[in-house]
Length: 501
Image 1 (cartoon, helix red, strand yellow):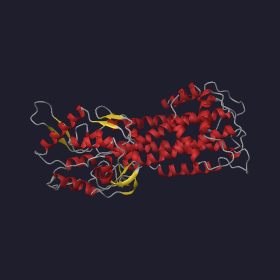
Image 2: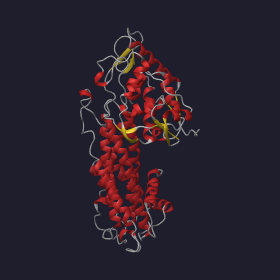
Image 3: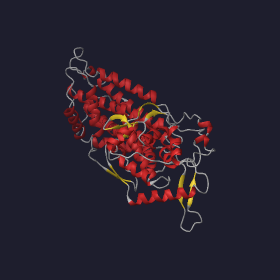
Image 4: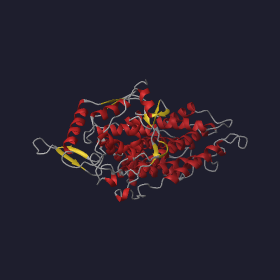
């Protein structure tokens, strides 16, 4: 059995970092408060279903909600999940799937979904193992939550379909047995509550946001290292100048960059005005900071919000009825769709900045006299030539996929879902693009490391000097030529996981 590395309690807000930590085994605790909420919600559901129709428990689904459902509860569960088995494509990353299930567990544990306590217990038990359902990528419009991907996840927890255990794909029933887990037993309400939420969308968006945030921080530091290696005058970071611009993120980034470049000594040989990829970096990075703050707010709201339909709310003591069931749209992933589209735009511009800075660095007409492609023997060696070609491809791929998904609404489900947010596509797309941005950051980091080897001056400010030392420790100079794919990934890992100074 894998060693447990962390713990999560289902009472109180969910720690955003828990989604990434959920990739590995962790302890999820159903504390007394969570159990009381779940049991109260279950009693309320059972009472209210006697008074009138409850969507998905006594009715059909989606456009067929006007028809009676199946009388047998186990049969209603099968009916809920079977018709959603229409996903296609490669499996989602296990990080996204387990993060989504942690979000789903937390949401159900708030007591407004009417699920049985056993469902929450079984989900919590899964996290102590490496079990991860195999979930196909394509099929969700993010309108009634992530119906199709969450249906595959739920079926795997029932022992149907496929799952991963210790990284190996296997029939789900075998994986459950090997993990020591008991298959889920569900009724129609349980099954619908497991699929009727935006958990896949939120998990992918939150994980993508984390990566882009790390890349933004790294690019801020790499820009300072670039300016120091080239001997740039730091006047473009002047506090009065940036304050006059009026944007809070620009001020925040400018303060960080001035701190990093404290003690820098300009060479006196650079142009009066640097290219925009240096001179306008605080404005670009600052605007990205403000945009990321919006994404942060959406992620925070989604992490503390409950996405389901219908939802059950207990009444006050002394009320004539125990509470109410409300049919609505708290499974509609529009906030995450807008945020993910904005995140993709930020990713595209950050990636463009990294690629342009690398281009400046390898160009002898603009890099302060360093050799072309940062090779000490041009023609005999080719230095960063292949890496630059790859960064061009990465930027093109990001741009091609940065088209807003939330603008693509397409009616479906007999016009029951006549508007859809496409939040799932937006979030998963942003998750993929964030990985490419990490590679662009790693490519620039490798270029700066190689520039120091190819004749650039040593940094004169302590911050950039420490960063260059870390890069030089992790990556050997490029001489002679060698494949650099692993070096780019190593630089990306270093830069995206560095502790903040």
